[in-house]
Image 1 (tube, rainbow, N blue to C red):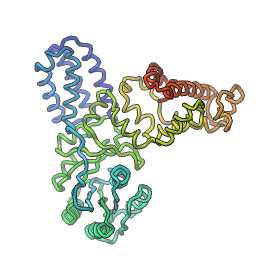
Image 2 (image 1 turned 135 degrees about the horizontal axis):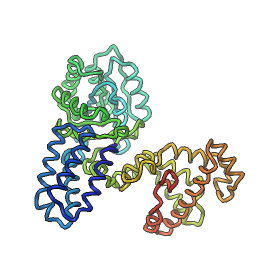
Image 3 (image 1 turned 90 degrees about the vertical axis):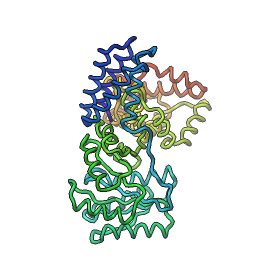
Length: 453
């Protein structure tokens, strides 16, 4: 997300940081670049204008001009104003009510409401330890009801059945009654969407809202629709008292105009980002972290949180004991590390959060297809070869390449990456995290040939 915006702003920021002094001219040039970058990102024009005015006012003040490093100070101002534009802090769900807490999902057809319902249920179950019931009030699409039932089973939520011949209001009321009897914590109501905004749709969802009085009414919108997402959100907010927004398909949006426009246009906070198709691909929206990503500074906090939630701690401890006990880091361990990486959103997700990654050339970035290719090579090895990779010589390399559908040079590259990983693991086992980080310096991926992490 924000790839194009990050590229443009990173160039502007590099120029600013090199300035010993700031003048009216270079501030003007920088702000023109920022303005063009935001417009290309499909940020709404009124939002861009207000943002530039706020930055210009602060950039012309003593705070920046009297600073020892005015270029860096101006970057700080841009960062702070990006945070202000998107909302000062993460706005979580309000679940401090008598259970069950009711969450109503609204949005257009195809925006990802049903999938987001399941993602939200999974997040509440796994992270908040809540018992969750999901119900579909979409009586126009039987497939939507079936889809929610399947996803509920996948995430461990209670599914309340509904049918196309029932009234949406009755469906919602019956689901809530069932949740009360079962002493469940949260009810998420998935409503019907339409291909466009129409009066019938709005009347129906208003009736459901008035009947159940949800504590959260979340508008689900496709981020790839850009500033149109903000306009649609505003239209819905005129009918429903929205409490927040879930921005879906953020992983496929290189511009980011929706994320930067919605709060300013609607006044409603973005609460979550959908960053993939899997039910685990939902992130809390933290404006300060997103601003840091946009400016190419990375998002280490989110990376650490993701590792805490998704990395198998027992497996990590087992590997640490194995290496500290003098046993080598073999190909089985390497494959496990690749699996852990994929569970954290793959290389694209990790790179997005690593500081400085946006400054790497595009052809230097690995993608998940290469990770799967690496796994295929390891899987084509015999158990002995995976345990003792040093035995893999010429004829074995040719056999492994043929078995995995790759080239011998791909096998050679993997073996080299494994050796690099092995050396780093030894340094970590001796308590040398600093040594490991220094060892990684200069080994970032170059044309897909460097260290894979």
